[in-house]
Image (cartoon, rainbow, N blue to C red; front, side, top):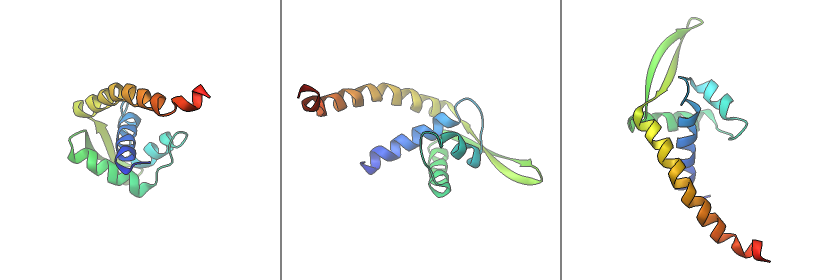
Length: 105
């Protein structure tokens, strides 16, 4: 898969994982696991990129005596998810075009 396409898909997937509630790294990976395999190092790279882009914010809170980073989606992150949904319709049309010979046989 094209690296830029995959990057965009992973970014929006992480945003979707925290859309309904703030979350932390391990829980994000756990929530995504039934759909996408994601390593910790990949996740934290994505989270940093999304934070830099203003699509999420980070707060630190104590949990069981340890500090944990919680991630919160921003309005820009919500807008990115909505843009992805609109763009995905075009991707589906392109997929149908590319695979049309297979269906016509």
